Length: 205
Image 1: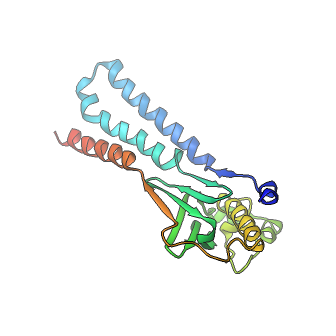
Image 2: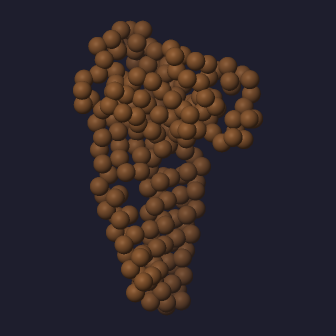
Image 3: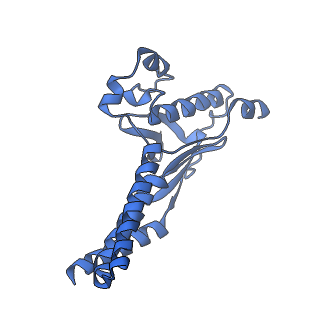
């Protein structure tokens, strides 16, 4: 156990571009709300302020909070509306065709925080990058496997640790039924849903 801990360090992945974009959108939303206050347009604030708040909250939910945490005991995928905890024995295959996707006996888990690269990024990848993303234990190789991409870097770490655990015989027994746990983000759903309803009512009334 100690040896495994020495060759594996917990890692987190969060899309840098998404975080920058969320900050820009939130700043724009706050500036819009402030403009209503400065000009004394209280009716406009009541009618359209909810839509600006929805824009800012939506940007945070979609681009700021999603993340992928790779730990010694499990992979945690935080998406917009839920967080999924996937223990290592439950992972059967790792795919990166559209985004980092973990295939388990209980279904697939896609990581919003690790999207596959754009067509331009794939075309500009070097041959060395492609060789580093080579097939491991039957895992399919896609442009999203390139280690210089967000999905590829995460897939590389997961596959390497998965291989270490498999070599140590720690995956032989497989995962227990129900081991993949999903936590729904009810607060996020309630906030976004409430702001959406308020935005629609503000425009219609």
